[in-house]
Image (cartoon, rainbow, N blue to C red):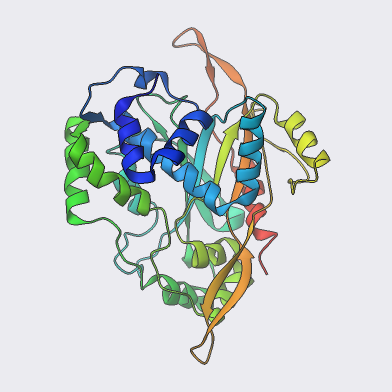
Length: 342
């Protein structure tokens, strides 16, 4: 059974072929098995957005598309665990709010709440996890990282300013109003949701102009993560399939010759295990010193895999999936784009 509100939102945004494919591919939260036609809840809109963002990630990650197609061909599916994006906490950020504030203004009205802060000090970043209050185990989480330019050199900071100070704000006045209404009421009329969905999906993209190649080189010297933001912006850095045994999957994918991370990351708790493909290589444009447009190969996005063990929750007296992340794991996974940067 399909939730008609989610289906109609996706049909309008993506068309029938992609909508059918997404419903056949992704897990569907049980909380969405009951609905009121024409009134879109925050959980419905959140899941529709996540489904669209997953499709966008596959469009930019051929390896992720191949893996997903193989899984479906074998009669399986994808349990969308979380998506990750990178931001820059910098005051000279053009019209875009600095850091994660550009996205918490979207996530909170949709029903997501902060569920953990993770210092990524080796990268000069901070990560925060946002989980959905209505279906924390079934609606994909967001792992939002902020880069702190003040932790780097003055030359690096100037390159950051040069890149991001042209940023535009993707949220229209109408979208801001609709998000406020959604946060107040927990739902929107479907006509308003039709208008809002493409705007919030479009927020997960690059909103600054083509970077100068010299600025990219300056960023790459000190932070592969900021260099990645220079070309990819706030697009999904990766999307993640929750699997039963990531160690087994890693071995199988390596045997196929897939570009897998050499080792599986293990959390300090011993309950969260992660690995990934290396980032797909993409072609991006830059402005050269003489004002011409040049193209070079850079790391794009990638596809990740995670196994989450359960722990016994004393409060509810029941077993619950460990939805936390791990700073060490995250920094290891982030290397999937660093290794391809050049």
